[in-house]
Length: 95
Image (cartoon, rainbow, N blue to C red):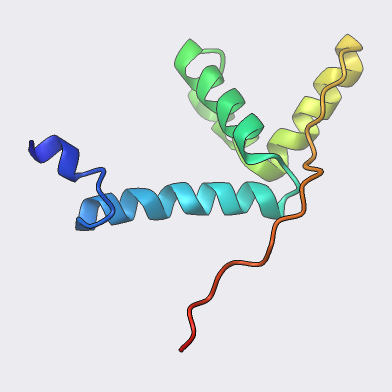
């Protein structure tokens, strides 16, 4: 039962985990990268072992997009890496 509490936003640990995810998603949005596409690709590369420890910096959103565009140019396969969605500004509670 203690394992599930770590993922609940009401616990301190769960709150920290959600904050990390929110930072990653927001970072992707700010860099014009579709968060779901980016996270899916990054997780696949890490889990499959295709990325080495010293190459982790290439997975950051501001580097990832350029690397994917270069890869697409080399292979001739084109994908939509930049977001076409307009995101509203972050919600701020009245206060």
